[in-house]
Length: 68
Image (cartoon, rainbow, N blue to C red; front, side):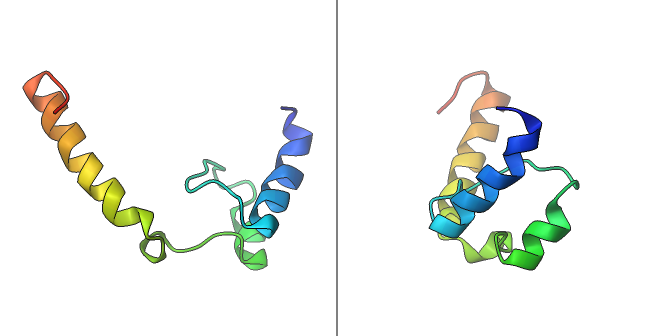
């Protein structure tokens, strides 16, 4: 996807309610996306609890040499 189309696609996804749970945007558009309400604080998403559980097991698996 061309860089020039990315912001429009992100805004369209957020507006439709079908945006990704996680998005790496750096700081290029963070303030403008926040102003539109497209970004939520991390703690407001129900996926956080599941991610934290997954992260704990992933770290344990990497430390032990295998994913558990």
